[in-house]
Length: 110
Image (cartoon, rainbow, N blue to C red):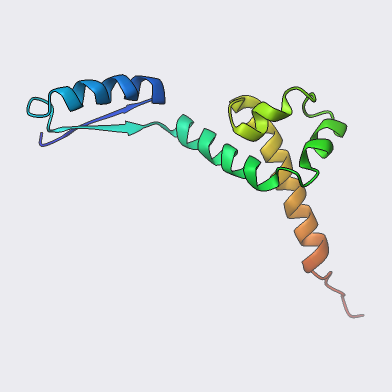
């Protein structure tokens, strides 16, 4: 085997990188990757920054999807489960808005 791939979360990766950087000759064939969980949290954080100040927080609160105190965690991507549920609902709402706005109904001829 030429290389060894290890997939871990961000906390474990920091410790792995510390070991790799202190022993570069011994671990030159080891590659560390961040897992999907950290990637999704980063994506949720990016979406949160895009919609911040747009009224998204108020809509989520009024819909009962999240409490007013949990919105900050959702927008930062730190509350993974809540972010997943809320952004899934948000994507559905955007898709419906897109369809209502841009897709014209098909009129059948008699």
